[in-house]
Length: 204
Image (cartoon, rainbow, N blue to C red):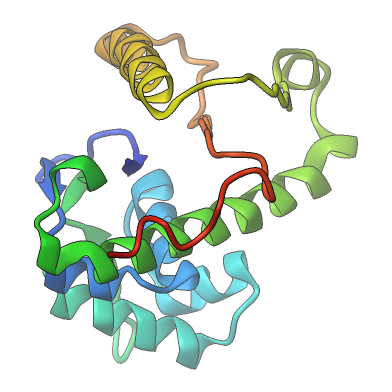
């Protein structure tokens, strides 16, 4: 499972693999969306993030402090005046693979996965509100698809690897992207249709 990856800001590291402490920091969908916003838009203030996500500035400041304590964001030097603080992401992407996590990370890993799923829903809801106002070229290029396939866990793992390979090819061409390009949110989700899998079997 890979959490959002965005254009590489100067001074940021390519990726961070989430340990138990950072997984716990991420166990909140608002915090996931705050970091995603910093990776998409670049450095920002608590007030700007609050306005974008529809939360109050105090809440935005709290989540920024938690992300900073986890080493995921840092204060942007030489920006802001007075009490205004600018923050930026330290890494381009966060990586967590449940198949590789040690046993002591299971609880934190599941909480993180839950938060990421909820954060994706919130971002999709915000995108849906913009559909009626999209420029024609972006309206025609965008897609909101839902496929139901009959697959085993191994099939899903192979499909994930193939899809991530395609994404890597497009990322490699980012430096030659035309001037009309903008950050595009690509959500790839694969999970059993609710109600079709016996729950609790994975909790030993």
